[in-house]
Amino acid sequence: MAIDMSKIRAKLGQLQGNNRRRDMMWRPEEGQEVSVRIVAWPKNEGQPFKERWFYYNIGNNPGLLQPHQFGKPDPIQELINKLRDDGSPESYEMAKKLYPKMRTYALVLVRGEEEKGLRIWAFGKMVYQSLLNIMLDEDYGDITDFESGTDIKVNCYKPQGRQYAITDVSPRRKSSAIHDNEKQVKEWLDNVPDLDSIYTCKSYEELEKIVNDWLDPSDSSDSEQTHNESRSSSSDDSKPDSSSSKFKSLDEAFDSLKDL
Image 1 (tube, helix red, strand yellow):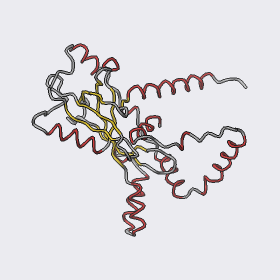
Image 2 (cartoon, rainbow, N blue to C red):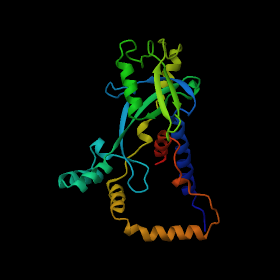
Image 3 (cartoon, rainbow, N blue to C red):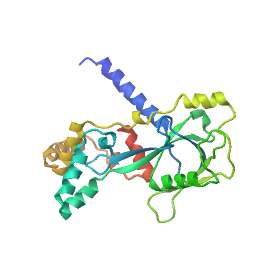
Image 4 (cartoon, rainbow, N blue to C red):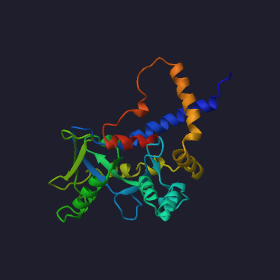
């Protein structure tokens, strides 16, 4: 069989794109304290952060970007509305399972890694609230200001007995310029990573199939069983599938979304 070189090039481009997306993302490592400078997203209606909503725990999907937040047709939101209109306790409980959850994104310059430029830091509700409270504190104000802003200390650690690591944020005691070279700052701003290239919505039809398979998995169970039997008969590898392994932290679980 002749090899289709166009498909090889497409696959190479996909892999290079995945690597690029990983390079654009940053998250704190457990057991380390790092300083970052938060930079407000350009052309974001004056908001320093970006919010995105995802559906979770629908089938084997780690997360699905919600089309409804962009004003697009959304079969999962339609199902939520129908369940709420039904009014029964069972429908209400199922609707709650489907409710999307918010993830927040900031542009950051990681101190000590300035050569990597601006990157995207994703975090949850608690870190988001902490950062907003710092910005509302009159002692700090606009921490994103290039000349008089404030670096943020990010400390990631896992308390004894906790399953997931915790991320704490606190402002440095003194304000500072983001950098003393205006040309370097301009270069960073000219190369802002694109959040929307990392997370994209699936089509209405794709989401409709995902939610239908989740509601009635019997249609896909036979083919899945056949696939699993074929895999077990053709391999003696006893290691568990990496897709079923547990994440070490919530941040690590969210990071898996960038390859969708």
